[in-house]
Image (cartoon, rainbow, N blue to C red; front, top):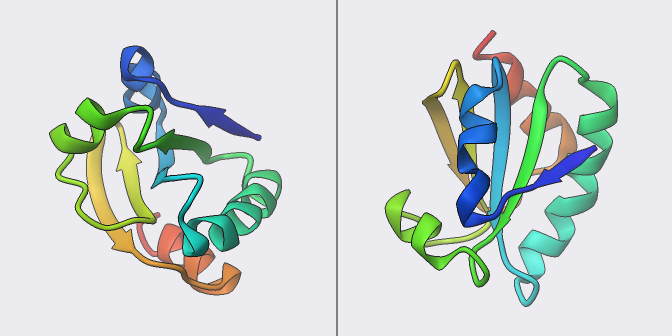
Length: 102
């Protein structure tokens, strides 16, 4: 399951032991391709919390986090950004990226 982030609940993602935050937008083609990949991974990796933040609806949050290209994935661990990834990646590449931080 992918949780939706709004400007007022960013702290929810920061509280997770391990989380992936997807900054995306409705009009973004690569974001639309990445969405189903993240949805599948959220089912396969219950130890990781998955979040989505629409940059159009959460402009201040996107600015605060330095988002300049989407899709942008943040890997959070214990409230800190452990790694970032920009652009579409296939499922196995995203899974490997998440697992390398374990």
